[in-house]
Each structure stands twice: as structure tokens, then as C-alpha cells.
Length: 113
Length: 107
Image (cartoon, rainbow over the protein chains, first blue to last red):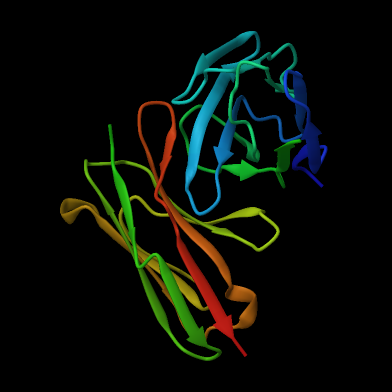
């Protein structure tokens, strides 16, 4: 079945560490997105990519980095510069940039210990 | 940028009740979507509805684009309908989400 796989489901980070969240899709979608969700809040866009080897900052990109070397993969690195990284992270994709048909992964819950 | 407001923030109902969730948005849009987030965090796309009315089983949605609002109707609620319902509108290259309505259906 086609879909988006995010891993790991749960991740614990120590102060000062960088961690990488994985997002893989087999839907042949061009566009991929990373969103952050804090408790009781909506989703906020971190980064998005419309095509391989290209990506754009969203509303809250500071302290995060991404790469898009393959169409299927869009990993997110949470760097030590992100001062409040504890949150639920969701990856999504669409067939075309800015279009309908959003598919979301099941999310990664990141906690700083 | 576009602002999206949802109401009510919380809704608690008994199984079998009907409910109406509202989404107001601040600018004209050509893409509005409703999502359901289940208690495990999974987001499911319910409707793509920039205008007009759509129905899918017990759920239906109506968007009045000229008046900048959308409504999601849930009839004969079931406990599996519990979760958070999000409205999202397309801004410049991104989907802008409201804060959500948390729906709790008690047996």
C-alpha cells in the first residue's frame, strides 16, 4: 500500500544533541512538508520541498534543517539550536505543490530529556 | 497571512448526537480541507472542499467561499469520531491550519 512512513515513533534527545527524523513516501508525490504540532495547537510549517534538491523555509524553520536528495525521502534534522524541540512532528506529501490530496505520516514524538 | 479560526474549541457529546463544527478564514481561498486527527496522532483527510457541499457517509461539509466560512457536520456520532478536527486553507505554497476542535463522543 502507498503511504508515508515516519520513524522513529518516539525519540528522546539530550540537550545539545542533533537528531534526525525520517520521512519516506512511496506515493510518487512531488511535494513534501514537515509540520510541528504542540499540545492543543494546530500544525505549523517548518520546511517544504516542491522538487528534488530544492526546499524552502516555512514559518518556524530556525533550528531545523532538511535535505531532499531523493524524491521519496525528506529527512528533518532538529539541531541543538532549536531551544524548545519537544513536540509532535508530522511529515506530509502532495502530488503537486500546493494542491489537494495531502497524505500525512503517523508522526514522531520528540522529547528533550 | 491568512488566519483560520475554528469553533468551538471543545465539544463533548453523547453517542448518537449530531454536531456542527465551524471554520472561518480571513481571505479568499481556492483550497480548503478538513482533517480528522485520531487519538494516536494520525491525520486523515476528510474533505477537499473549496466551495459547495460534499457528503461522505455520516459526514458532510459545506463551504461558502464568498462569506469565508466552512461547516463540518457529523450526524449520529460514534465513539470512533472522537479526536481533533482541523480546518486548513491553502496560503502561498503552504497549508494554514486552524487550532482545531476537540470532539469527545461518550458512549
